Length: 456
Image 1 (cartoon, rainbow, N blue to C red):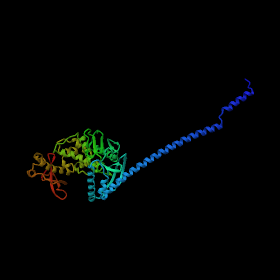
Image 2: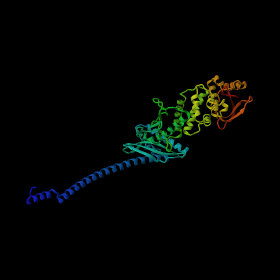
Image 3: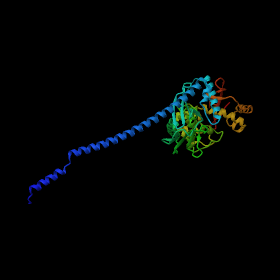
Image 4: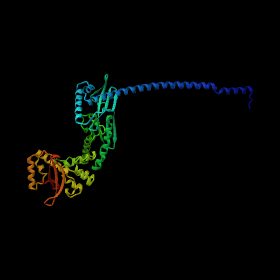
C-alpha cells in the first residue's frame, strides 16, 4: 500500500471539485437555450399568423366572389319572376347571338308557364361552385308544389358575373359508386342521383333474378353523362354498360333526381336485358302469342321494379297464383312461335280455362292485333285469330277484315266466364271502345286447339 502525502490528497480533492459543473454557468446556459426557443416560437408564431392572415384573406375574397355570384343569380331570377326582360337579358353574355336567342326563348317560356301553372321562382341557390373565373349554380324552382333544380353556368368578367352557355367540362370530379352487381360512374353534380341509381338497380337485379332465374350475370355499369343529346341506351361497345344523360342538363327534381319517368326508362332497358338472358335471347315470331307474352314479362318486371301497375294482368296473375318463379319457367319454355297453350305446362293445368289467370291485357292485345293485321292486309294470320269452324264467326271475321281497321281504342275492362251451348267454357270480354266516354261491347273467346280464338 502506497503512502499519500497531504499535498497529494488536497490535489485530488481539488480535481474532484473542479470536475463538477458550476451552478451559475448552468443557469446561464439554460437561460440561453430558453431565449433561443422563445425566439423560434415567436418566429413560428409570426409565420403562422401571416399564413392565417393570408388564408382568411383568400377565404374572405372567395366568399365575396361567391356572394357576388349568388347575388347575380338572385337578380336574374327576380327579373324572371317580375317579367323584366331587359334585366334578365342583361345578365346573359356570349361570343355569339345564339345564346341571347336561346335565353329570350327561355324567358318567354317562363312567362307562359307562370300563367298556366303554379310556379314559384324562389331564386334559392342550392349549390354554388366557383373555379377561377367559372361559376356553376343549382337554382331551385317550384312548379305545382314540386321542387326542381336547374344548373346554370357563369363567367366572371371585369363588370361582374354573367350567365353563359353550358360548360359541361365544369361538371365536377369523376367518381364511381359500386354495389352488388352494379357500378355507377358520375360527376359530382350527379352524386345524389348516382347513389339512388346504384341502390335501385341493385335491388332490381335481386327482384328480377329471384323471379326469372337470370343465371350468372356480368356486372351492370351505368354511366351518367352531362350530355343532353345522348339517348338512354346500352352502349354499343359494352352490352352491359348503360348510358344516359344527366337530368340536370335540363330540369331535375330536387327531391328525387331519379324520377319515375327516368326510372321507367332504365327499368325497361334492364328488364328487357334480363328477359333476354333468361330466355336465351329467344326472338319471338310476329304475330305468335309468344310475341306478346315475352313483352308482357318485361312489362311486369318494370312494374315490380318501379312499384307501379303496368297492366300486365296475365303475368301478374301467373306470379300471384303460381309464385314468381313461374314467370321464369314461362320464359325458359317459350319458343318463337308458341301460343298461349304454353302456359299449361307452367301451371300444370290441362287447359287454359282451368289456369285461373287474368287475360284482360292479352285479349286487349289480340284486339289491337286484329287492326294491325287488317292494316297489313295479312288475311291468313287475321283469320287464325278466329274460331273459323263456326260459319257465323267466319262471316263476321271477313266482314271486319273487308271493312278496314278500326281507329278506335279497344280495352278489355273485365272478363266473365260463361258456358257455351256445347257445354264448353267461353270468356266474355267486356271491351271499352273509344276511351272512357265511349261505348262498351262484348267479345267472346274460347279455346281451340289449345289456344284462344275469337268466337263472335
